Length: 242
Ligand SMILES: [Fe+2]
Image (tube, rainbow, N blue to C red; front, side, top):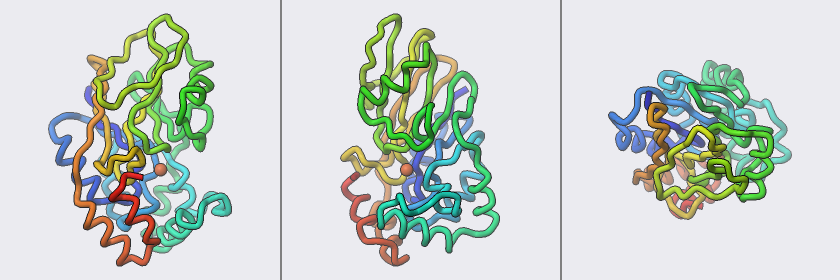
């Protein structure tokens, strides 16, 4: 079975559509690591697609924020404005769907899905020390995570005890004895200095993970954000991949 691994779509319909065109024929099932909504201008369209097409979905912090499940005091002003805007725009049944999403970890096939980290859905795993902390209690296994919007990840390979970074430019083969934290990157708001939409394909048969990027109509996504009255910074950052 081959999986399309999506994370952090963030209401960006243009990026989602581009990813679906780019990945056509490469997978049989779709999984989503949360943050379906927040930031972008198409929360209803993106949520409708996720509801219809994803085999497994877990919630992200923005899905909680946009459905009134978390305190917005801890959000920066831009994220807070986007969450409040999204809440007013979401159709009632999409609101119910998003507020009922399960918290990770969620197991699919031979891998585990989390939003932030295996230990906490809101934790950012950005550095090797962050990953070491998360992998301390994991002898082996394959975990897909999102939240940082940075494609790549971390791993302890074979019998070694050193945690190293995984390059998003190389194919990853998950060996039986490896402990891996793999981030497909963000579909709708990449923050790794590359504006292209990010995702991954996981082949559970060969245990290969391919990181992929594709161009999308950034201008259209930016225009919609501006026309919706969302903060300008949200449009600007899409063009920079920040
Ligand atoms: Fe996110």
